[in-house]
Structures are given as structure tokens and as C-alpha cells.
Length: 153
Image 1: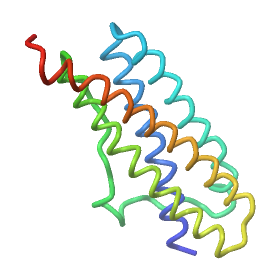
Image 2 (image 1 turned 90 degrees about the horizontal axis):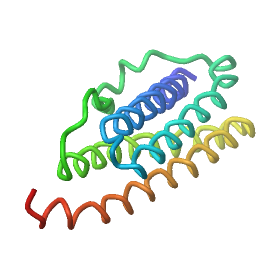
Image 3 (image 1 turned 60 degrees about the horizontal axis):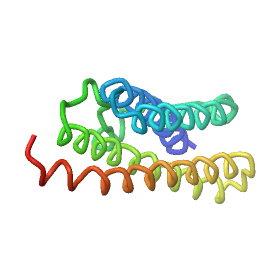
Image 4 (image 1 turned 180 degrees about the vertical axis):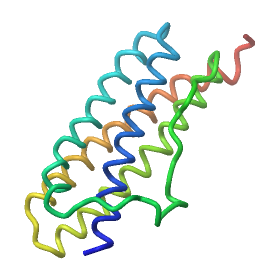
């Protein structure tokens, strides 16, 4: 199952990158209380998904995620300033979370094919958590957009 290990690795690495990126946005926009606290909480969800995946990694292994290079999403090394910066950082998180969600969808399909109930449960739960992360990001972007795009700094 060499390709399953590729996607298990992609799930693990992309969740780690998403968690780090949520923390980066939290710290970079710490003056925005809801962004700071919610991004911290959402980072913990991604870390919990990685922890749940750990026994699966032990069982199947984890390929270095070199093969799907075009699927790699870079994390947020630094955040941008201001309202427009926050909006752009939230969009970057959304792109990364979308990669995470589609990865969990693929892993879930593989788990169904293998009839691996443990892997399927992990993939379904992680996919639900990622959906919630994406919902918050969409809602927060809608909230931030008018201020960022219309009001002069």
C-alpha cells in the first residue's frame, strides 16, 4: 500500500502545517481577541487529529511526502499587518485547510477500501473537524472583508 502511506504522510504533515499556521496567525493578530483565541483552539484540533493518526502511522508507515509535491501548501511563516493582512492570512489558512480536508477525504476512501474501521473513524472525525475550521474561516473572512476592503485605514 505505497500510495496509502503517501496520503497518511500528507495528512500528518499538512495537519502539522495547519496547526503551526493557525498559531502563527493567532500570534500575528493577537490584538484581535477572537482571532487569537479561536486560532489557538483550531490549532489544537489539528494537533489532536495528528495524535489520533499516530497509531495508523505505526501500522502502515508514513511515506515522505515528496511525491505529491504540487499538493504541498506552505505554512504561514509570517503574518501581514492590518485589516487586509488579516483577511489575506485567513484566506491562506483556508487554502491550507482545504488541502487538509481533501486529504482526509482521500484517506477515508482508502480506509473504506481496506475495511479499516480505525482509520475510517480517524479520517471521518478529522474531516468533520476540518469542516468546522473551514466554516469558521469563511465566517471570519465575511466579517473582516467589509472593514478591510471599504474603510480607509
